[in-house]
Image 1 (cartoon, rainbow, N blue to C red):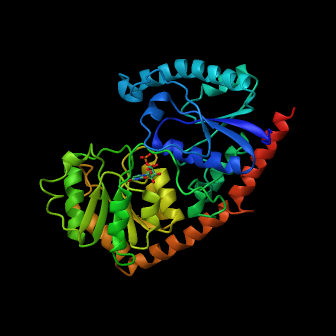
Image 2: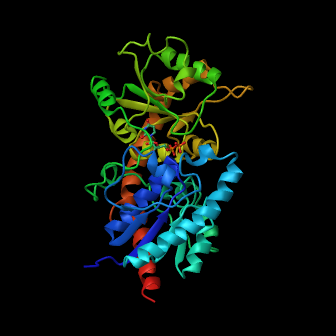
Length: 391
Ligand code: UDP
Protein backbone atom coordinates (compact mmCIF):
# COMPACT_ATOMS: atom_id res chain seq x y z
CA UNK A 1 0.00 0.00 0.00
CA UNK A 2 1.23 3.48 -0.88
CA UNK A 3 1.37 5.34 2.44
CA UNK A 4 3.65 8.24 1.60
CA UNK A 5 2.44 11.82 1.28
CA UNK A 6 4.75 12.88 -1.56
CA UNK A 7 7.92 11.76 -3.34
CA UNK A 8 11.11 13.85 -3.35
CA UNK A 9 13.99 13.14 -5.67
CA UNK A 10 17.18 14.36 -4.01
CA UNK A 11 19.99 15.50 -6.27
CA UNK A 12 23.29 16.03 -4.42
CA UNK A 13 26.58 17.35 -5.77
CA UNK A 14 28.80 14.27 -5.60
CA UNK A 15 31.22 15.04 -2.77
CA UNK A 16 31.03 13.77 0.80
CA UNK A 17 30.52 17.16 2.42
CA UNK A 18 27.52 17.99 0.19
CA UNK A 19 25.89 14.57 0.30
CA UNK A 20 25.90 14.15 4.09
CA UNK A 21 23.56 17.07 4.91
CA UNK A 22 21.18 16.23 2.05
CA UNK A 23 21.01 12.67 3.24
CA UNK A 24 20.18 13.81 6.75
CA UNK A 25 17.47 16.13 5.46
CA UNK A 26 16.13 13.15 3.47
CA UNK A 27 15.92 11.02 6.59
CA UNK A 28 13.99 13.73 8.42
CA UNK A 29 11.55 14.06 5.49
CA UNK A 30 11.19 10.31 5.36
CA UNK A 31 10.29 10.23 9.07
CA UNK A 32 7.39 12.53 8.12
CA UNK A 33 6.19 10.06 5.48
CA UNK A 34 7.74 11.66 2.41
CA UNK A 35 9.18 9.06 0.05
CA UNK A 36 12.81 9.74 -0.79
CA UNK A 37 14.94 8.70 -3.73
CA UNK A 38 18.48 10.04 -3.65
CA UNK A 39 20.37 10.12 -6.93
CA UNK A 40 24.14 10.74 -6.78
CA UNK A 41 26.32 10.11 -9.83
CA UNK A 42 27.34 6.64 -10.97
CA UNK A 43 31.01 7.38 -10.39
CA UNK A 44 30.34 8.55 -6.82
CA UNK A 45 28.33 5.43 -6.00
CA UNK A 46 31.06 3.23 -7.47
CA UNK A 47 33.54 4.50 -4.91
CA UNK A 48 31.26 4.21 -1.90
CA UNK A 49 32.51 2.09 0.98
CA UNK A 50 29.12 2.21 2.75
CA UNK A 51 25.61 2.83 1.47
CA UNK A 52 22.61 3.91 3.54
CA UNK A 53 19.89 1.32 3.82
CA UNK A 54 17.14 3.69 4.85
CA UNK A 55 16.59 5.59 1.57
CA UNK A 56 16.14 4.43 -2.05
CA UNK A 57 19.20 5.04 -4.18
CA UNK A 58 19.27 5.58 -7.93
CA UNK A 59 22.00 7.08 -10.10
CA UNK A 60 22.35 9.81 -12.68
CA UNK A 61 25.49 10.43 -14.71
CA UNK A 62 27.92 13.36 -14.80
CA UNK A 63 29.30 12.01 -18.07
CA UNK A 64 32.39 10.62 -16.36
CA UNK A 65 31.22 7.29 -15.02
CA UNK A 66 34.68 5.84 -14.30
CA UNK A 67 36.22 8.44 -12.05
CA UNK A 68 33.96 11.52 -11.94
CA UNK A 69 35.67 14.89 -11.77
CA UNK A 70 39.15 13.29 -11.81
CA UNK A 71 38.56 12.35 -15.45
CA UNK A 72 37.71 15.90 -16.54
CA UNK A 73 40.34 18.29 -17.91
CA UNK A 74 39.04 21.31 -16.01
CA UNK A 75 36.36 22.07 -13.44
CA UNK A 76 34.49 24.12 -16.08
CA UNK A 77 34.45 21.23 -18.56
CA UNK A 78 33.27 18.92 -15.77
CA UNK A 79 30.33 21.19 -14.93
CA UNK A 80 29.41 21.66 -18.61
CA UNK A 81 29.30 17.92 -19.29
CA UNK A 82 27.53 17.27 -15.99
CA UNK A 83 24.83 19.75 -17.07
CA UNK A 84 24.31 18.02 -20.42
CA UNK A 85 24.53 14.36 -19.39
CA UNK A 86 23.04 15.06 -15.94
CA UNK A 87 19.92 16.69 -17.44
CA UNK A 88 19.39 13.75 -19.83
CA UNK A 89 19.91 11.04 -17.23
CA UNK A 90 17.79 12.90 -14.66
CA UNK A 91 14.93 13.08 -17.18
CA UNK A 92 15.32 9.34 -17.85
CA UNK A 93 15.23 8.62 -14.13
CA UNK A 94 12.05 10.65 -13.60
CA UNK A 95 10.38 8.70 -16.44
CA UNK A 96 11.60 5.38 -15.07
CA UNK A 97 10.24 6.16 -11.59
CA UNK A 98 6.89 7.26 -13.05
CA UNK A 99 6.67 4.03 -15.06
CA UNK A 100 7.20 2.01 -11.89
CA UNK A 101 4.28 3.87 -10.26
CA UNK A 102 6.53 6.07 -8.12
CA UNK A 103 5.83 9.54 -9.53
CA UNK A 104 8.18 12.26 -8.36
CA UNK A 105 6.57 15.44 -6.97
CA UNK A 106 9.59 17.53 -6.12
CA UNK A 107 13.28 17.73 -6.94
CA UNK A 108 15.50 18.92 -4.10
CA UNK A 109 18.78 19.93 -5.73
CA UNK A 110 22.21 21.16 -4.76
CA UNK A 111 22.68 24.71 -6.13
CA UNK A 112 25.88 23.48 -7.83
CA UNK A 113 23.42 21.73 -10.21
CA UNK A 114 21.07 24.61 -11.12
CA UNK A 115 20.00 22.90 -14.39
CA UNK A 116 17.83 20.58 -12.29
CA UNK A 117 15.23 23.39 -12.23
CA UNK A 118 14.83 23.21 -16.02
CA UNK A 119 14.39 19.44 -15.92
CA UNK A 120 11.82 19.80 -13.12
CA UNK A 121 9.91 22.36 -15.24
CA UNK A 122 9.85 19.99 -18.26
CA UNK A 123 7.94 17.51 -16.12
CA UNK A 124 5.80 20.09 -14.32
CA UNK A 125 7.51 19.30 -11.00
CA UNK A 126 8.39 21.71 -8.22
CA UNK A 127 12.00 22.17 -7.21
CA UNK A 128 13.72 23.33 -4.04
CA UNK A 129 17.36 24.37 -3.71
CA UNK A 130 19.24 22.92 -0.75
CA UNK A 131 22.27 24.95 0.25
CA UNK A 132 24.64 22.53 1.88
CA UNK A 133 27.64 24.60 2.83
CA UNK A 134 27.39 27.50 5.23
CA UNK A 135 24.31 28.88 3.53
CA UNK A 136 20.83 29.74 4.51
CA UNK A 137 19.70 26.23 5.11
CA UNK A 138 21.17 25.76 8.52
CA UNK A 139 19.72 26.93 11.78
CA UNK A 140 23.13 27.42 13.31
CA UNK A 141 24.05 29.70 10.43
CA UNK A 142 20.72 31.46 10.78
CA UNK A 143 21.68 32.50 14.31
CA UNK A 144 24.75 34.19 12.88
CA UNK A 145 23.19 35.80 9.81
CA UNK A 146 19.64 36.48 10.83
CA UNK A 147 19.48 39.89 9.09
CA UNK A 148 20.64 38.59 5.70
CA UNK A 149 18.38 35.57 5.83
CA UNK A 150 15.33 37.60 6.84
CA UNK A 151 16.03 39.92 3.93
CA UNK A 152 16.46 37.01 1.48
CA UNK A 153 13.28 35.37 2.71
CA UNK A 154 11.35 38.41 1.50
CA UNK A 155 12.45 37.51 -2.04
CA UNK A 156 12.47 33.70 -1.90
CA UNK A 157 10.59 31.32 0.37
CA UNK A 158 13.52 30.20 2.54
CA UNK A 159 13.53 27.75 5.39
CA UNK A 160 16.46 27.03 7.67
CA UNK A 161 16.95 23.50 8.94
CA UNK A 162 19.60 21.55 10.81
CA UNK A 163 22.15 20.92 12.17
CA UNK A 164 22.04 18.08 9.67
CA UNK A 165 23.83 15.43 11.64
CA UNK A 166 22.46 11.96 12.52
CA UNK A 167 19.59 12.10 14.97
CA UNK A 168 21.19 9.75 17.52
CA UNK A 169 23.80 12.45 18.23
CA UNK A 170 21.11 15.09 18.77
CA UNK A 171 17.42 14.53 19.55
CA UNK A 172 17.59 10.70 19.27
CA UNK A 173 14.13 10.53 17.69
CA UNK A 174 15.23 8.52 14.61
CA UNK A 175 16.51 5.37 16.27
CA UNK A 176 18.31 3.86 13.29
CA UNK A 177 20.00 7.16 12.38
CA UNK A 178 23.48 6.69 13.85
CA UNK A 179 25.56 7.28 10.74
CA UNK A 180 25.33 9.35 7.58
CA UNK A 181 25.56 6.02 5.77
CA UNK A 182 27.41 7.14 2.64
CA UNK A 183 31.16 7.13 2.98
CA UNK A 184 33.93 7.52 0.45
CA UNK A 185 36.59 6.25 2.86
CA UNK A 186 36.75 3.25 5.14
CA UNK A 187 37.03 4.38 8.78
CA UNK A 188 39.58 2.71 11.09
CA UNK A 189 36.90 2.43 13.75
CA UNK A 190 38.37 -0.21 16.07
CA UNK A 191 41.85 1.32 16.10
CA UNK A 192 40.45 4.75 16.93
CA UNK A 193 37.95 3.74 19.61
CA UNK A 194 40.31 1.28 21.31
CA UNK A 195 42.97 3.97 21.52
CA UNK A 196 40.54 6.66 22.73
CA UNK A 197 39.14 4.31 25.39
CA UNK A 198 42.57 4.37 27.05
CA UNK A 199 42.85 8.16 27.21
CA UNK A 200 41.76 10.37 30.14
CA UNK A 201 38.62 12.53 29.87
CA UNK A 202 38.96 15.66 27.68
CA UNK A 203 42.67 15.00 27.18
CA UNK A 204 42.85 14.30 23.43
CA UNK A 205 43.18 16.70 20.53
CA UNK A 206 41.38 15.45 17.41
CA UNK A 207 42.85 16.73 14.11
CA UNK A 208 41.27 16.47 10.67
CA UNK A 209 41.09 18.49 7.46
CA UNK A 210 38.12 16.62 5.97
CA UNK A 211 37.84 14.76 2.70
CA UNK A 212 39.26 17.24 0.16
CA UNK A 213 41.82 19.70 1.58
CA UNK A 214 45.44 19.17 0.58
CA UNK A 215 48.09 20.76 2.79
CA UNK A 216 51.45 21.77 1.37
CA UNK A 217 54.49 19.84 2.63
CA UNK A 218 55.76 22.81 4.64
CA UNK A 219 52.38 23.26 6.34
CA UNK A 220 52.19 19.55 7.04
CA UNK A 221 55.60 19.65 8.71
CA UNK A 222 54.70 22.71 10.83
CA UNK A 223 51.48 21.01 11.89
CA UNK A 224 53.26 17.78 12.80
CA UNK A 225 55.75 19.59 15.05
CA UNK A 226 53.06 21.86 16.48
CA UNK A 227 51.10 18.79 17.56
CA UNK A 228 54.14 17.09 19.05
CA UNK A 229 55.30 20.22 20.87
CA UNK A 230 51.85 20.83 22.38
CA UNK A 231 52.43 17.81 24.60
CA UNK A 232 48.81 16.77 24.17
CA UNK A 233 47.80 13.32 22.97
CA UNK A 234 46.36 13.57 19.49
CA UNK A 235 44.34 11.56 17.01
CA UNK A 236 45.23 12.82 13.54
CA UNK A 237 43.45 11.88 10.32
CA UNK A 238 45.96 11.93 7.46
CA UNK A 239 44.36 10.60 4.27
CA UNK A 240 46.61 8.11 2.47
CA UNK A 241 47.20 10.59 -0.38
CA UNK A 242 48.50 13.11 2.21
CA UNK A 243 50.73 10.71 4.14
CA UNK A 244 53.87 11.15 1.97
CA UNK A 245 54.00 14.78 3.15
CA UNK A 246 54.56 13.81 6.80
CA UNK A 247 58.08 14.46 8.15
CA UNK A 248 60.42 11.46 7.82
CA UNK A 249 59.81 8.77 10.45
CA UNK A 250 57.02 10.82 12.05
CA UNK A 251 54.65 7.85 12.37
CA UNK A 252 57.42 5.38 13.28
CA UNK A 253 58.64 7.59 16.10
CA UNK A 254 55.19 8.32 17.49
CA UNK A 255 54.59 6.40 20.70
CA UNK A 256 51.06 5.16 21.35
CA UNK A 257 50.78 7.38 24.47
CA UNK A 258 51.50 10.43 22.38
CA UNK A 259 49.33 9.96 19.34
CA UNK A 260 47.61 7.95 16.68
CA UNK A 261 47.59 8.72 12.95
CA UNK A 262 44.82 7.10 10.88
CA UNK A 263 43.74 7.39 7.24
CA UNK A 264 40.05 7.94 8.14
CA UNK A 265 38.05 7.75 11.36
CA UNK A 266 34.40 7.55 12.39
CA UNK A 267 34.38 11.30 13.09
CA UNK A 268 31.01 11.48 14.85
CA UNK A 269 31.96 8.69 17.24
CA UNK A 270 35.32 10.33 17.83
CA UNK A 271 33.88 13.77 18.57
CA UNK A 272 31.33 12.19 20.91
CA UNK A 273 34.03 10.32 22.84
CA UNK A 274 34.61 11.61 26.37
CA UNK A 275 38.39 11.64 25.89
CA UNK A 276 38.19 14.38 23.21
CA UNK A 277 38.99 17.87 24.50
CA UNK A 278 39.49 19.88 21.32
CA UNK A 279 39.12 19.64 17.52
CA UNK A 280 41.76 21.16 15.26
CA UNK A 281 39.74 21.52 12.06
CA UNK A 282 39.76 23.00 8.56
CA UNK A 283 36.22 24.21 9.41
CA UNK A 284 34.40 22.34 6.67
CA UNK A 285 30.73 23.02 7.30
CA UNK A 286 29.91 19.45 8.32
CA UNK A 287 32.86 19.25 10.69
CA UNK A 288 31.90 22.59 12.20
CA UNK A 289 28.31 21.48 12.75
CA UNK A 290 29.45 18.16 14.19
CA UNK A 291 31.76 19.88 16.66
CA UNK A 292 28.97 22.27 17.68
CA UNK A 293 26.44 19.45 18.04
CA UNK A 294 28.81 17.41 20.19
CA UNK A 295 30.05 20.33 22.27
CA UNK A 296 33.71 20.18 21.24
CA UNK A 297 35.70 23.47 21.23
CA UNK A 298 37.83 24.14 18.16
CA UNK A 299 41.14 25.38 16.83
CA UNK A 300 40.23 26.67 13.37
CA UNK A 301 42.70 26.30 10.51
CA UNK A 302 40.57 27.13 7.44
CA UNK A 303 41.91 26.39 3.95
CA UNK A 304 39.49 27.60 1.23
CA UNK A 305 35.88 28.05 0.10
CA UNK A 306 33.48 28.75 2.98
CA UNK A 307 36.00 27.66 5.62
CA UNK A 308 37.41 31.12 6.50
CA UNK A 309 33.84 32.37 7.07
CA UNK A 310 33.07 29.34 9.22
CA UNK A 311 36.25 29.97 11.20
CA UNK A 312 35.17 33.55 11.81
CA UNK A 313 31.81 32.35 13.12
CA UNK A 314 33.55 29.83 15.40
CA UNK A 315 35.86 32.45 16.86
CA UNK A 316 33.89 35.70 16.86
CA UNK A 317 30.19 34.87 16.77
CA UNK A 318 29.74 31.66 18.73
CA UNK A 319 33.03 32.05 20.64
CA UNK A 320 33.65 28.31 20.69
CA UNK A 321 37.20 28.29 19.39
CA UNK A 322 40.29 30.19 18.33
CA UNK A 323 41.77 30.74 14.90
CA UNK A 324 45.35 29.72 14.14
CA UNK A 325 46.75 32.61 12.11
CA UNK A 326 48.89 32.21 9.00
CA UNK A 327 52.16 34.09 8.53
CA UNK A 328 52.89 36.27 5.49
CA UNK A 329 53.72 33.10 3.48
CA UNK A 330 50.28 31.67 4.24
CA UNK A 331 51.68 29.05 6.63
CA UNK A 332 50.45 28.47 10.18
CA UNK A 333 53.66 27.99 12.16
CA UNK A 334 54.25 25.32 14.80
CA UNK A 335 54.44 27.85 17.67
CA UNK A 336 51.04 29.29 16.72
CA UNK A 337 49.50 25.82 16.54
CA UNK A 338 50.97 24.87 19.91
CA UNK A 339 49.77 28.09 21.51
CA UNK A 340 46.20 27.73 20.14
CA UNK A 341 45.90 24.13 21.34
CA UNK A 342 47.07 25.08 24.82
CA UNK A 343 44.75 28.06 24.90
CA UNK A 344 41.66 25.96 24.20
CA UNK A 345 42.62 22.88 26.21
CA UNK A 346 44.45 24.26 29.21
CA UNK A 347 44.30 27.84 30.11
CA UNK A 348 41.79 29.97 31.99
CA UNK A 349 41.26 31.91 28.78
CA UNK A 350 39.87 28.76 27.22
CA UNK A 351 37.32 28.26 29.99
CA UNK A 352 34.71 30.50 28.37
CA UNK A 353 35.26 28.82 24.99
CA UNK A 354 34.72 25.39 26.54
CA UNK A 355 31.59 26.58 28.37
CA UNK A 356 30.19 28.16 25.20
CA UNK A 357 30.75 24.89 23.33
CA UNK A 358 28.54 23.12 25.88
CA UNK A 359 25.89 25.82 25.54
CA UNK A 360 25.76 25.47 21.74
CA UNK A 361 25.45 21.70 22.03
CA UNK A 362 22.23 22.23 23.94
CA UNK A 363 20.91 24.74 21.38
CA UNK A 364 21.74 22.36 18.50
CA UNK A 365 19.76 19.54 20.10
CA UNK A 366 16.75 21.72 20.89
CA UNK A 367 16.31 23.11 17.38
CA UNK A 368 16.05 19.66 15.78
CA UNK A 369 13.93 18.15 18.56
CA UNK A 370 10.13 18.04 18.36
CA UNK A 371 8.76 21.59 18.15
CA UNK A 372 12.23 23.10 17.60
CA UNK A 373 12.69 25.55 14.75
CA UNK A 374 14.24 22.99 12.39
CA UNK A 375 11.49 20.48 13.10
CA UNK A 376 8.79 23.11 12.52
CA UNK A 377 10.37 24.24 9.26
CA UNK A 378 10.55 20.67 7.97
CA UNK A 379 6.87 20.18 8.92
CA UNK A 380 5.99 23.34 7.01
CA UNK A 381 8.00 22.20 3.99
CA UNK A 382 6.17 18.87 4.01
CA UNK A 383 2.73 20.44 4.25
CA UNK A 384 3.54 22.82 1.40
CA UNK A 385 4.78 19.86 -0.63
CA UNK A 386 1.53 18.00 0.03
CA UNK A 387 -0.61 20.97 -0.92
CA UNK A 388 1.23 21.42 -4.20
CA UNK A 389 1.41 17.66 -4.91
CA UNK A 390 -2.32 17.20 -4.43
CA UNK A 391 -3.24 19.93 -6.96
N1 UDP B 1 34.87 12.67 8.22
C1 UDP B 1 34.89 11.38 8.73
N2 UDP B 1 36.09 10.84 9.08
C2 UDP B 1 37.25 11.51 8.96
C3 UDP B 1 37.23 12.83 8.47
C4 UDP B 1 36.03 13.38 8.10
O1 UDP B 1 33.85 10.74 8.85
O2 UDP B 1 38.29 10.93 9.28
C5 UDP B 1 33.58 13.25 7.80
C6 UDP B 1 33.13 14.33 8.75
O3 UDP B 1 32.41 13.75 9.83
C7 UDP B 1 32.28 15.21 7.84
C8 UDP B 1 32.86 14.98 6.45
O4 UDP B 1 33.70 13.84 6.54
O5 UDP B 1 30.92 14.78 7.88
C9 UDP B 1 33.72 16.15 5.97
O6 UDP B 1 32.89 17.19 5.62
P1 UDP B 1 33.30 18.72 5.83
O7 UDP B 1 32.18 19.57 5.33
O8 UDP B 1 33.71 18.95 7.23
O9 UDP B 1 34.61 18.89 4.97
P2 UDP B 1 34.96 18.60 3.42
O10 UDP B 1 35.39 17.18 3.37
O11 UDP B 1 33.71 18.87 2.60
O12 UDP B 1 36.07 19.55 3.16
